[in-house]
Image (cartoon, rainbow, N blue to C red):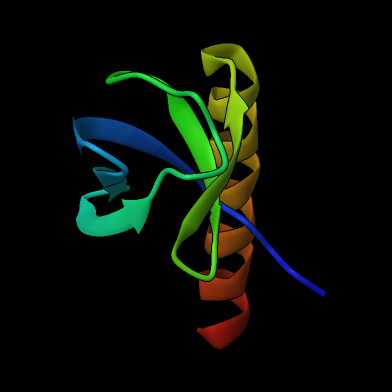
Length: 76
């Protein structure tokens, strides 16, 4: 199973981009999507594979936050 977290495109240089995974910046390939700075993308194995609209990205990030908070509660 593959789990994907939306990441925001910060800059694009040709077919490579810098994206933000909640404060962690990574370089990814953009060969498979036509995205622009400010878009949210799903990344798998170093490639942006899908562009998301901001509303869907924010909803997904809220679910991730809830999941991580539940995990923290279980560890206490």
